[in-house]
Image (cartoon, rainbow, N blue to C red; front, side, top):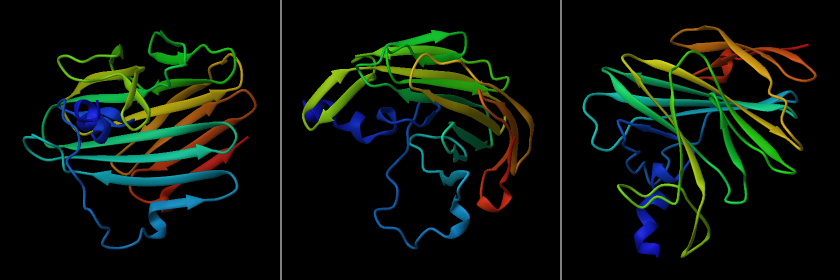
Amino acid sequence: MAKKFRAYALGSEGHNTVLIDHNGQSAGPAIASAALDHHSYKIVDAFDFATGSFDRYKNINGNVKHQRSVLYVRGDFWVVVDRIITDRSRNIETLWHWHPDCIVEKEESVVQTNNTEGNLAIIPVGQHNFKINLIKGQEKPNIQGWYSSMYNLFTPNITSIYSTDINTSSTFVWILQPSKSKISLLKAKIISDNEKAVKIKVKSKNHDYKITIPYYSSEGISFVKK
C-alpha cells in the first residue's frame, strides 16, 4: 500500500497546490541556505500574510515559476493568490483536497461542503474559464482523490481540480470561506492587478474590505476594513 501511494503522497498531486502542464514540483533543496526574512511574512492583529515561490517543475519545457501569497483575514476568510510566470502557453490545474467525511458539491464555479456542521467554500475570483472536475478514488490513468490519516492507510476522498489554459503570465485569486453552518457566500471581485500585486474588494456578512496583496513581499500590503 505504501509503495503504491508513495509518489502521490509525497508529490504535488496529493497537496493543495498547482500542477503546470500536468506536472508537479521536483524535489526542493534539502536544507535551507538562510532563514526567511521579514519580507516573506507579516503577522498583525488584522491578518496573517506569507508568500513564497517555486520554479523546479518536472518535465517542463521553457521557464515557469509559481508564486503563491496567502492572506488570512482574521476571523473571516483566507485569500490565496497564485501568480504563474511563464515564457509560453501552459495548462494550469489547481488542486483542492477534501476530507473523506465532507459532503462536497459544485455550484457553477464554487466548490463547497454541505455538512451539518463546519463548512468551507472555494470561491475563484476573476474571469478565468475553468473546467472543474471532482475526482474520488482514482487509480488510472494516474492516482488522485485519496486521503491518508496515517502511514499505510488510504481512503478515497474528493479532490476538486480547476483546470484552464493560459497564454501568458497570469494571476489566480481564490477565497476560502469557512462557516460553522450553511455558507452564505461572500462577494468578491478583482479591482486591478499588475506584475507586482493584485487588489481585490470583498464583501462578507459583517464587513467590507479593500485589500492589496503583493506577490513578492509583505511591504506592498494594503488592508482596509469597514
